[in-house]
Length: 245
Image (cartoon, rainbow, N blue to C red; front, side, top):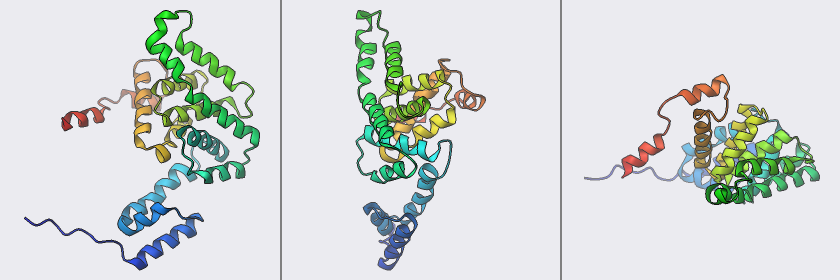
């Protein structure tokens, strides 16, 4: 049986047109756009609206807040390609002291494993040093005196933990955000930014942790988020893994 004919590459003139259109729209061109234009033009067409919604259009964070989170997120993820966010950080009013705050938050996210280790392995040896409480106390010290609002630093830390696939850190950051009264939509946007440099799986993991906290009664969600928590059978990935066995 013969296989169906496969579509060929995009005609050269159309590739050139697409790349020039992208350059005109965004002001720059990155190599992956050429690959998409030449082989997956439909994906390139979908790329623009997704990027605009995720990165460029106002949602629940201001332009400066978004760029501060981006600076922390990219640093935590070790992604140096996003240098245009450095430019945007400064263009939206970012200062050297605020950049210092961003690197401080990113560095803190990298060291959370010590508290997770205490919680998972040595907590019984240190009953007077509960890991979660020690983490939250140290975080308050970290955030004191930063040249950005504490809420913004917490949102950036949540994004950084997600980028690093630090499940314990994500859990603690969510708990801290609720305790500080951070609006849930702002938390979602901070988490969603990791979709771009780190992939959808980091966002899924963070949302799974968040869902478990709501369902366990560890946090008190708003009505909209309670509707999410009350929805049954949200573990399709587990079903998919079962099907693949």
